[in-house]
Amino acid sequence: MSRVVVVIPTYNEAETISNVIRDVLESMRIAGIDCHVLVIDDNSPDGTADVVARLAEMTGKVSVIVRPRRMGLGSAYIDGFKHVLEKMKDADVVVEMDADGSHDPKLLPQLVNPVLKGESDIVVGSRYVGWGKWAGETKGREIISRGANLLARICTGVKIKDLTSGYRAISTRILRLVIDVLKEASRGYTFQVESLAEYAYAGARIGEVPIIFLPRRRGKSKLGTSEILYFFLWNVKHLFKRRIPRILRIKT
Image (cartoon, rainbow, N blue to C red; front, side):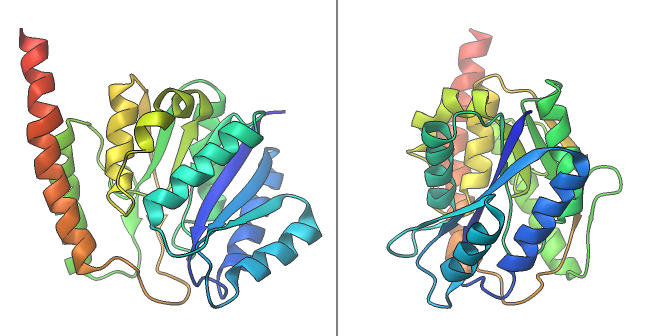
């Protein structure tokens, strides 16, 4: 049976993580897909890791890696990917997913199945294709997101609608090709765009399926002004350092 590992970074998500994990396991059980949940916790002071450890003991389908301090979203995913590739070698697909309930676990099978069937190497859950949308968010935040995605498309050349989505399924075959490059990637939220660009440059077939991006169940977003500024600067740097040279090489 094909195996899927859902990697979930956490920092102070004790109030939400239990329900998210339970919903993930139930959704995949109904779909008949073997699934394991791997939580990467940045030593949350609210006891997130303890909640996950109890679920691990109860289900046998959950594990947690506790890091010494808060080290960033991208760093958490990289550590999760390395763990899967080194310790869980029977995995066929790795899923990125938020811990706050904004990604609906019921939609997991529609992300995972195209990768399991060999139709795509990566499937991104998109707010901007088909019936995909934001739910319960302000119009201003959606406008900022659309602008960020437009900037990312221009600067990376990756032609999908939602490069900043953090809900995606990735073939472990592609991860093995780019993991060494990803180790040098951004530690924060810009990792989502940077990693997708590296997958595309490695020849990955990238698809999108619609999702409804749900409001956080509890707590506040961890995306701050400094992350937004870094996102803008990274994209401009990438345009001149990687994108334009690639275009010039192709033309010559």
